[in-house]
Every structure is written in structure tokens, then in C-alpha cells.
Length: 131
Ligand SMILES: [Zn+2]
Image (cartoon, rainbow, N blue to C red; front, side, top):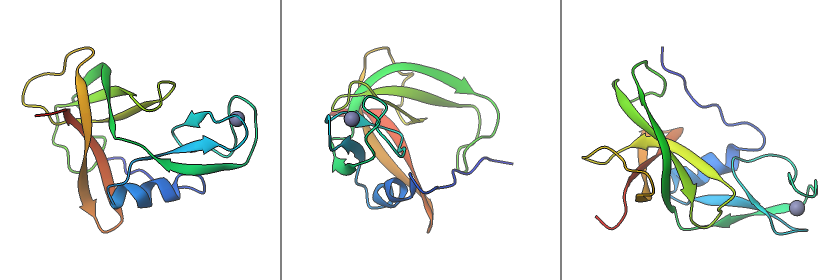
């Protein structure tokens, strides 16, 4: 049985934005630190005030795995999951399925693509940027 992400209090709007192809991070209203995934308060200054900020869905491949067990819906195994260091938010990494034709390379520039699973769930995938 595949795992299905469940939006919670903090992440619900993030998932709704992803469904609209908007890649957003949380920005602390006090110290300006950006964060992802969504959480209730700033990890740096613990302020609870924050806002969403849309950023370019781009980054660089930092690592990846080859998954041979079902995890997310809509991805027949084996498949590659990449960890991406976000360009707009160097302190944050994002994960997603790899959509390149060739295996990923360390440091490779990538861009998010959106995969609609159903009415309630859209997943972020990553593909080579500029190609
Ligand atoms: Zn802060």
C-alpha cells in the first residue's frame, strides 16, 4: 500500500498552493528566516508570526536514493527520489521523484514539476532545469 501525504494544520495551505503550481515557503515575520516544510514557529527565533512567500521552484541535486518499495501513489518502483537544495532558501531541502531521462548528478540544476494524483493531491517532482 502506497503512503499518501496527509496535509495537517501547518502544511495544508502548502499542499493547496502546490495543487495550483505555486511553490511557496514560510518566511518568519521577525527574523526573515525561510523554512520548509511548514511548521508552527521559526526554528531560529521561535516567533510564531510568518507568511507564505512564493519562490522559484529551483535548486540543485544534493543526494538521491533508488526506491524499490511502493511509497507514494502513482510511482511504479523502482524509482529515484532526489533531495534538492532550494536556490531561494539555502537552508531548506525538498524531496520528490526524479523525472530526468538520465540518472541525477550531484549539483545538477533542477526545477520542480507538478504531478496531479487526484482532486486532493498534487506531488512535486524534479526534472533537469532548462531542458
Ligand atoms: Zn525567525
